[in-house]
Image (cartoon, rainbow, N blue to C red; front, side):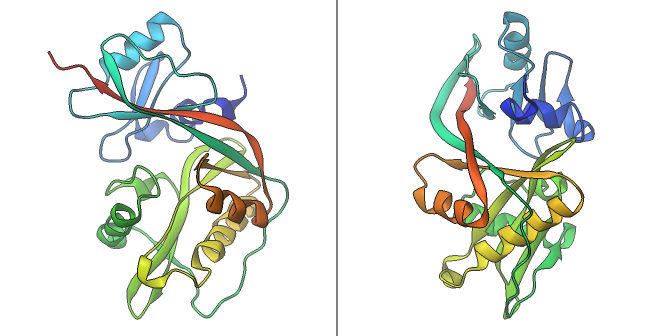
Length: 227
């Protein structure tokens, strides 16, 4: 199995092991970090282990290349298709009037507010602990940000790319995406990312930066059946 086929599992069993809950059959991110979870495989034992980790009204996200098998006891509130893209070469930073600045614990509330407004994907107050995040501030406001999410040996995901509506049209998402991807390449990793299959504008942006389509991915939001 290619690690990219189950990027959540690959991350939780390697570079993000300290952020994980679970066992050898199924794992999830700690609930303050993110909502992603993964079974080791699609066998009955692994799917049952995944189901045991999901509490009512606390859904988890599953993202993988194989078709998603819904474990007994869980229900899918959303099923969707995405794309997985990988960088085809070294991506270099792009200069601009406002330089990207590191984001961390002190910026957590602003990052969460921006992500809640723009919905780049599941993002919680401590999601920034998954990797390096940078942002662009304009007049003191966090105008845009981008960062890293899933990480395992040799690969790091570009994620959390979003721009406040007041600052769109300035190329901030493009600049931040290049900045993060360049940082990933500088430490010897391949950059990859995910986008919704229907988000043609985002896919065009990433293609223009040098990413290519690797495959489609399946995404499900799974919740426990009450009772």
